[in-house]
Image (cartoon, rainbow, N blue to C red; front, top):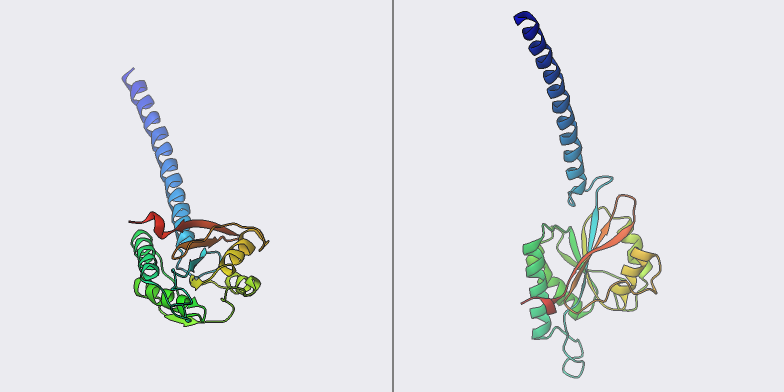
Length: 206
């Protein structure tokens, strides 16, 4: 009787051990899959299959043309851009390779403020086709072919049309209502499709 009980306990121990080994293997496999998913979600590892982000910023409020024909940022415009940049840089792990802006003074000054918060390795630079009436397809092609996170400081209606073109394929649809000094984050997935990830506007910030 004692021998039979010992044998039963031994058999149960072997079954338990086999189940334990099976669970250990399952947990190990899950851990590997989790690590792979985490690696794919790292926005700054520019490898095939990773996610790329574009940060679109409408310039801050400028001075009226009657006060200054170059229309630099007003004090409110500067303050709004700082509020947005401060909030986003403190709330998110954001890294951008460069900040590009149009040749207009208000966009240049907006980019210079952003540069102080995000410190892109390539700095800021004025580029073509970011003007208000520029063809959005040009920058849509550039962003589609880029593997690097990029920030653009620009104007309406260009930024709105660019967002709609990337997200819906139709630049005439209104996808996002941009605000001066606000920032919109667009995310490109592994299959090349785009989506609006989030938006921050200075009116909501203290």
